[in-house]
Structure formats: C-alpha cells, structure tokens
Length: 413
Image (cartoon, rainbow, N blue to C red; front, top):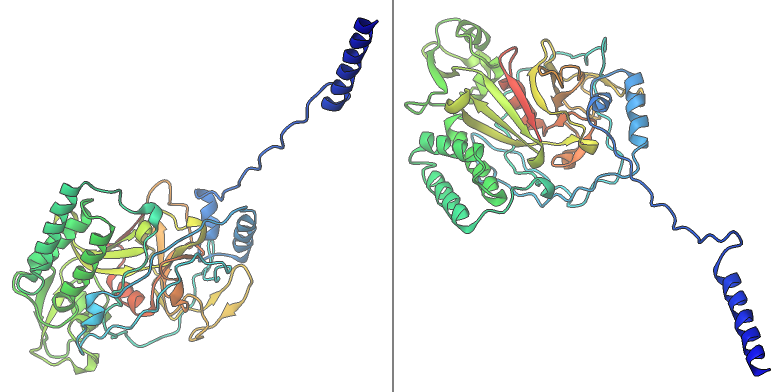
C-alpha cells in the first residue's frame, strides 16, 4: 500500500509541473525581436539635400531626413585661435571667432539651400562694391574624433615633432622654405591631430606677410611683379596679365583700399597661376593651395561647416560658370520663405560660389556650393543642407581666389 501511495504522489506532481511550465500547445515563449536602426544614405539621396534647388526637391529632402531614426552624434573639441589672430598687425586685423559648442546640435539645421536640381534658378544678386576687407579669420575648428589620425609609435611621432619644429623655426628667417616644409608635412600622414593643428596655425602665420601684405619676397614662385601704367585699373591688370583671381584679391594682397588710388609707377604683386581648394571633412577645414602637384604650396586654411547627416558630397568639383554671386537673394526650398538681397537674415550670407561635380559619381549632384553664414557657431559642425559654410570674412577671400574654369575643389572624407 505504501508503494502504491508513493507512486500516485509522484504522478500528481509531474502533472502539476508540466501544466505550470509549458503553454497549452507545448511551445515556449519567444524573445522579442531586436529593433533595427535606419540610416540616411549618402549617394544620390544626398543630392536632395543640396543648398540650391527647387521647393519640390527641398520637400523631398525634408521627408528623407524625417525618416532617419537616429541622428549622428558629434563631439567636436574646443576651438582655439591661431597665432595669426593673436599677433595680427594693424594692416591685417582678423575678426574674432566665437567658440562652438562641444555638444552635438539638437536644433533643426537652418535652411540655407539656394536651389538644387535641373532647371533651378541661381540666387539673384545686386551690385556691391569690391571687397577689400582684411585676410581670413584663421582659427582652427574642432576635429571629429571618429576621423582622427591613428596613434603613431613614439619614434614616428618624435620624428614628425622634430620636422614640425624645424619648419616653424623658419617662419620669419626663411618663410618660403617654411611654407614649403609645412605644406609637405600637412600633405603627408606623418602628423598627429595636435601636430596638424599647430601646422595649420603656422601656415596661416607665415602667409600673412608672404601673401596677404604688400611686397614680394625674392624667389616667391606665387607672384609676378607688375608696374602700374597710366590709366590702368585692377580689372584691366588682371585681364591683361591673365591672372587667375578676382581684381578684389589684387587689391587685398597689395594693401590697396581704394582702386581709384592706384598710381602710375606703383609696383603690384600679381598671382601667377590658379588657386585650388581642398575640403577635409574629418577636420571641418578648407585648405587653399597655389599651384599643383609637388610644387603646390598652401596659402590659407579656413574652418568650415558641413552638411547635416554627413550629406556634403565628396570628390572633385569645379566652380560652375556664372555661379559666383555677391549678396544673392534666396528662397528656402523647404519653407518657401524668400530672403531679399541685403537682408541681414539671409542664411547664406553675402557670397555664393556654385560647384559642379566632374567625376562620374558626383556629376549629377546639383545645387551645392560654398557660401557664408549668419550662424558662426555652426562652423565646425554638421548643420547645413550639404553646402560648405564659411565665416563671412573667410568666404570673401575664397570667393576672390577661385576662378572659372581653372580652380578645382576637392572634397575629401
């Protein structure tokens, strides 16, 4: 009897355990599926985020942006000023630059497109006097940590440090050699992030007397010397010598505040060849060079702002013919809001340089350009609709340097 009772108890317990641990159909509960993150593509979709297009394209871009589930987080580093800002002479004062926030932007980007897509009209422009303002603001923007140079071993870092120290030691005694050495160092991958910042500072410092002030250093390959004849104007000189720059740059680099004050016999330095720009997206920086290949030298380095969600396209571009505009009027393609010429609220500022891609992967991109901004805190951040933003004083210099059809603009990751 005791054996039978024990057997019945075991059977009852087994039935109770099965009911409480399995569903009625014998299946176990499943784990919830993990959610997937969506990402905004770059390719052709980025074209809809250009800053020069129709309202229809702007709406398409806005819809694409709203579909993005997660916004990339930027953690730019604090900004600092270069020696050219700190030690600028009265002849070439530079504007101070506000510090950008170290946090990622959380507000929607301001609309600064100027119309993308086929058949779009360019911003209209009203006449304005030639720009004769001082050289660029040469401050250094924050660097995106995700694109920072990889760590180098102690030996390579020590060698790069010695080379950088040797180049900067010649800033005043041998400025031409210093500029060449600094250009080669910045064109290489030998410098770490901190060293690159110091090299950019030194480039802007050495070019203040070499490029942005009157007088030519003997042996400078950038300039030819011209003696003004009776009745000559800056525009005439640029055309007669086939100089690859605007006449305003001629006035700027020779310290001439008023074109009407040119006098016969006056000696001017005139750039010999074309200027080219390179945008390094990872550094939020535009570097302008004179010459090409192994002979090129860096003339200036500027901080820039770029497109939200990394939408600034990459590759080789040229200045689009008849696209360089002063004080353009502009219509926001997303909202339809119109900004007239001379409107201080115009988001694209007072200069516009249109770009056109020349490579198979970017030749269909339309409406992108280089322009100013009324939001200086956006420099060093991704807050435009794909265009390259610059501080007002900086974009004036770049506007005067880049010409059609010679100048190229390389936009690199």
